[in-house]
Length: 244
Image 1 (tube, helix red, strand yellow):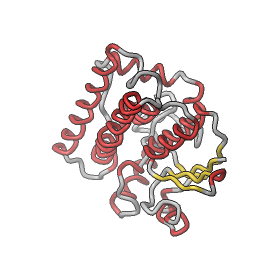
Image 2: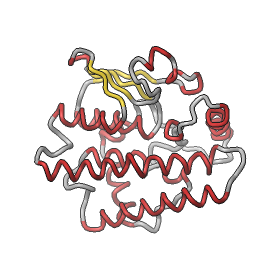
Image 3: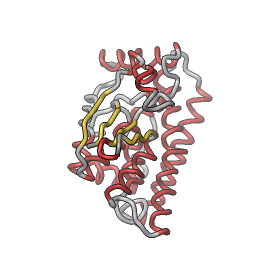
Image 4: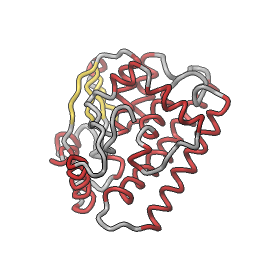
């Protein structure tokens, strides 16, 4: 049994989606960022970095894994699925997994902070991160122009990248002009295991920027950034519906 420590963020959904795809039994512990649970001593004993997600594999002497990419690799190797065993196939998946870890996630996270959360809008910063996110989206679109998935068969690389790319509206970077990326987003969204993973915990409902709930969420996120409860951009889950 896997115990998953998570929240409604792209990095959290990577792991819940993978667990659903792999059919691995798991329990859920949702951390409350507004209370700083991810920084409390009990959780730092699990993840010294004080971020989500993390897992404890109860079947393997309570083995702990933190960092979403490392968790995906661990689960794929444990089950023998979603990651090829041959050296070249494995390398290809890891390349695109690390592409997300080093590029898509950090750049979209910073776009969220400057575009959505900071009280003062800084056009230069917004343009910088929007431009870099768009560039990375174009890389994905080009990769998907002549293939169904990023690295051969559907893999942890697709799960990792999709969990972030699906939130493009919240980051303010449209994908309408990227047909292959759009096709891939829709195709993965339709998978039953993906839909199930987005309910662990439930993805936030679709809200407009003028919605009172949306404004409340933005204010909570802004406090975390400004007051230093957690300045990590990729811990601030975008306010997006499960179908976006």
